[in-house]
Image (tube, rainbow, N blue to C red; front, side, top):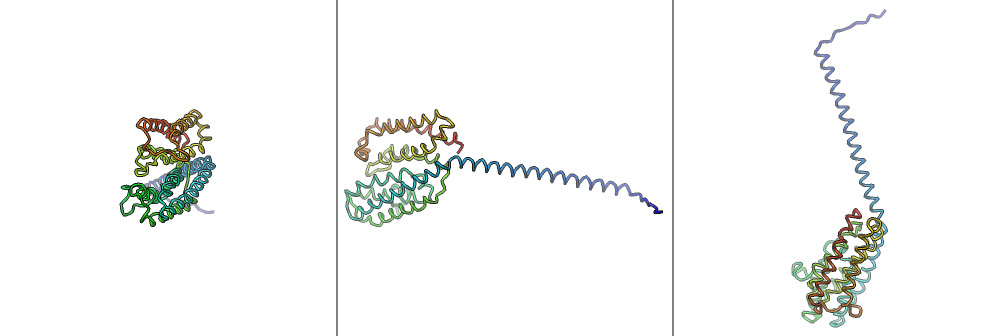
Length: 297
């Protein structure tokens, strides 16, 4: 027969055991709570990522089509800039003047992309005073030589650098990150460009070819709107219609100033002409600015 021996534990020892048991249970509950919270955080992050990916998937076709459009514009930009800079280097003043504004239009349509690529925009498009005088180069440097100084002399290096920058832009657009947000902000920025410098006549201060830039900026913004139009119509057909009508009204206001394949000198516009263009521009900018919020980008 096995005898069972019982020992009496002191009260203090019993209390200690109970206290430890309670702590272990508390730690276990705390760990379980932390695990639940961590799991919830992971799930929320995953859900957000999935929503973001789903949102980007909704705009994939528009993004792909816009990249194709940008590449097409860049190809033409390089070709036309090569013709312009060749005329500069050949000393052909009148040919260089005739090629200046048309070449710039390809750039102006896709300017938000260039602005996303570091120094390319100021290198190509800075005006006198935008950068340090020692760093000033690009189109407007050559514009000053052609119209203010009435010469092509001494501009060979500037012409070569401009063509090199145009080719670099073309190379970089192959891999630039384009998302739906860039499309929407790009369209708004293009109209801001028009209102801050083109409609005021400040952009082309020597050549007064501002209407070429004006038209190109509007065309670039309209292209983005057209690519996003199916999604916008699904969300708010009335807003989409309003934007479309505003683009048409602005184009109609600009039409009388066309001259052949180009536009008249900005100096030919009267105060009321500028005022009407500004009013139509503002009327378009307001609904266009709502597009991003409505589309959730």
